[in-house]
Image 1 (cartoon, one colour):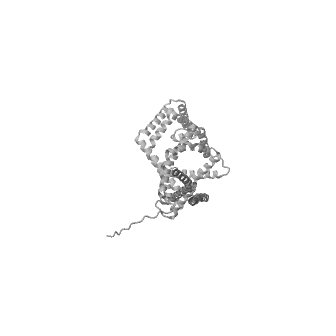
Image 2 (cartoon, one colour; image 1 turned 90 degrees about the horizontal axis):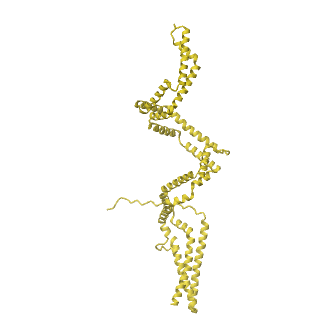
Image 3 (cartoon, helix red, strand yellow; image 1 turned 45 degrees about the horizontal axis):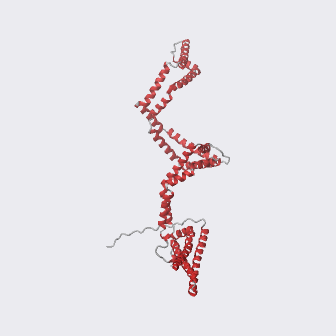
Length: 436
């Protein structure tokens, strides 16, 4: 029965162009010269072999046998090594002999092997950690930033980066984020107990009595400044039938009584009013931290403040002020005469302190090392996959050509050595056979 289902063939992998080789022409020229030299050496061995063979048959001189044997072995060794080197990159003489053109045929496997080799040997955590410890990147960064020009460059780049980021963000989104973040944070914290702890800290060692002293001084000055007004208000509250002289006596007593009371409270640290104020403050702090009713009222007030339009407007002005400050600072750094600023001073100060303080220097180096190691740990697999994927996407023939340009010149020495060593081995074997 015919299966109507169709089998979808995998889509061919797209071929991407490999990056150009900077000195490709020079490497190609050197490779061609080495190939020619190896070929000439092989041809010379072949010519010597033919001449020695003819002369040995014609004249029969014994020493020609040694020459023939050496030349014959040189030809064999040179041809064998030529085949081996050529088989790495292409089919010898264009003949599709099995297990030749190894690089084009095994390109993907080579890419995977290369990626795994880099991952396991170059991106190993211990290897990278030793290299980072030797480099001391923190000290190098501090030394670089200690130069005023470099600190200024970083300051300008930071200012422009922050300004660009602020301009990209929409004001509505930032304001919504700030409102949501600040609101969630404030709603998660009870205000009353926090305020109670703050007041308890402020009232430690009787510091709240200093506030009372200041309030008493303000009240005394206000009473003195509004003496006439107080007298008028007192006289307005007395019945109409009371004589004016009595009104004046009453207002005099009221004003003097207020002033006398304020002076007595200010001068006497154990005055009953002070004790009552101290008791009231402590009682208020206790209720802020333990009274459910007080805590509930504080939470309700907090929700009203968060929901008020003035609060949202205030948050919006914060973001607007930040953007304006960043823009003004970025424009300031563009000035050719710009030399300084808090940010530049902070960067330069940190750099100088790191260079002079061994403990800070060690912390800075460790921090950078750990940051780099964390990045390596996260990315080492991706880097291996990038290498293998990139090699896999290259054209097989182009990949073979590039590898040959990189290492082919050195491989020609294999052919040269094979020709020379082959001749020496052939000469030695012929000599042994003659001796035996």
